[in-house]
Image 1 (spheres, rainbow, N blue to C red):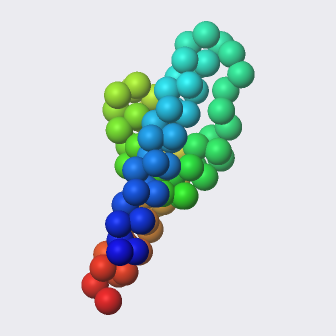
Image 2 (cartoon, rainbow, N blue to C red):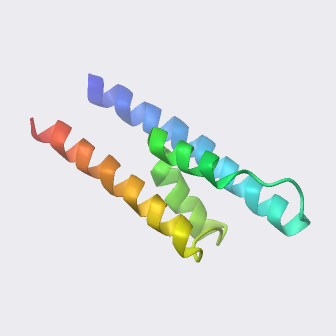
Length: 89
């Protein structure tokens, strides 16, 4: 039952994260006010990393900046490791 809520929360946060990446990409093109990278990372940390990964590929956004990618993949790896450990118990 708890897994069901985890998956639902991950989907919802991922949807939000995908939208925020799209907004940031739009603002980057228009040279408007951007979303801070720390906020993008926070959304990933809160479970939105699947949505962030999809958004990076779909919008071609934040996928070439090495410093951003290092933090992003670290967050994704920790999230995946925690999920695996939780499911294996």
